[in-house]
Image: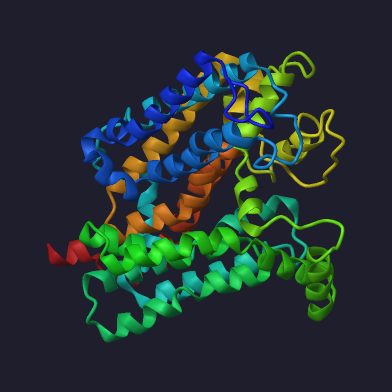
Length: 465
């Protein structure tokens, strides 16, 4: 049955039943996975909240849109509309399996007494010393500029430098959490805006929208983690910022053309304006372009349709590959695999028999990539492992003070929310690499900032005794 004979997805009765089950499983996930932490109330301050939001947009809501018109909301071709009901049914079943295993893994952990490796976040937060926070802010901002591509860097340094370039959010989160607890402090009231400046610098050097997300996430999460709720003014601000964030694609692309294309600003703006006013082709509105951006379900549908009939299973040990890429530095393993699943997917499954060619990376989606890697059991295994990892990090985060919790949420938000669109190995390896960089830099700073005892003097505990 189709909702739209022109371009809606073909769904059997079983397909519609699976779609309903998927929506119910999505809605029930916070109550099940966070049952020991307050259920839905804990969702905004949990990493599950970001994954839940990304999954809902990419699969649950996306199915509704494609069921109405998979041509208009897809990529202006009939590839999705031409898929048979059995393919749609199999894809929905895989997505449901993925979500169930992920939620099971995430909710498996109980409360932890210590923050584990995330104890390094306290050191990076300056432990109340403004000078230490300033050092982290400045050095991290410099790292983000160096890793932006404006300057040549050895490949072995690119990933750690890029992760170090995100650590400015840690002292910023602590400042905002302290101000939220004491909003009448004039020094914190001024400092809270200054510590957000690295987000603007990072966006200027590397214009991706996620780089300015901390401008909204840090203040909102700091207030929520400190007071347990958001005030009406915060909710109104969030309602205004979210659609604006999704609809500024043209402006961001114009700036990218200017920054990376090397043209004059006026020429770039004029060229894009001419493209949009082409008398032969009416340009798509910004809202439709934004809607098409979330195509995780599209990728799964195409993958299920072509694997293994056209493209064989890759039969890859995805968990082992993720651990190797996450823990072994490129300095010791120069031939380590690059994160090229997006471009590869764009050249193969996405472009197959479509007449479309694109040099850009296309998100393969985690369920689809796991299915291509080894079939249904690999989907279940990968989802369970990813859920266990995120759940463990989330439990470590809960053992921190409000400022530390905010820092971890903001640091990992851009890894958690879009994870359903990315390949498994990339997501797990990036998460592990982030933890390693945080621990190494935190340990180094702890040694550097440790009080020095003059030679021959008694240690503090010995003197007290």
